[in-house]
Length: 327
Image (cartoon, rainbow, N blue to C red; front, side):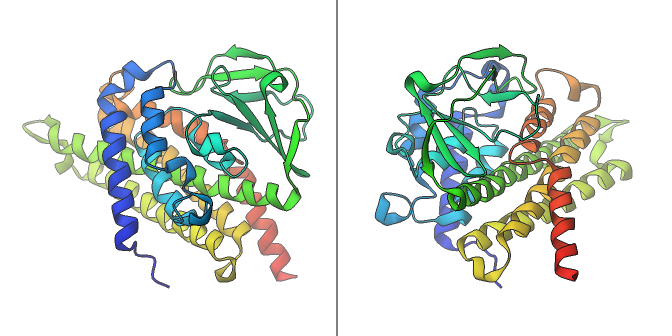
């Protein structure tokens, strides 16, 4: 199977990368702390068709499918793009305003464990809320939106609201639609984690070439080289798993979408977390400071790790799938 990107996909990647570099530059991270959505930048993303990337061309979408969406979301993750981009993209199938960038759509996948907090990202700014349950996809908007209490976020770029309850909402998708949405969300979250992993590697490589100690770049030290090599391997594994899972979503005949999406999220989550930690180590004392990218990357990785199931949950799901296959 040939997983190389074709010319149109490469052009999509480069176009999104240029837009993100212009609107969401890493040198601007401190200014973006607080997490308020930049509406001008949001409209620029919409004008490029990024929120409609999952929609087929006959429905006004790009027709790039899940692989195209993974390309887009890798760049959004690498540039730490703010706002509820993932849930808004998933909601485009049910809300035309989401696809056009007119609506900010949040989302939540409530657990079945009593007492678990009901946390929604960018709760103060969303226009609608998608509630993803086992029996379907539910939409809350207008007066149906719950009241949110602002709580301290893990990531300064991702504000969070806490709800004391969730309304049932209007059912816009059945149980199979909920499963498909969950798998797509898992792969796109993996793509964003892949972007974080790659950004941590890129920042560390640049720093290792620029920062000097004892009169030579620290990248000449074997210990730093080993850290960078491990970061590269983790990113490469995560990229293969993520794009393989996206291809499986587009064509389930080539594999099991459930296993593929779980493997992608597991590997991409590990890559992002470990690479962000390694980036802080390579940057030394500077890595902990507010002005440097590594701590932003680590905090975003923490947030994304818990989107659509964490690594432990997906490892257990993969183990169960393997066990079932052996019986």
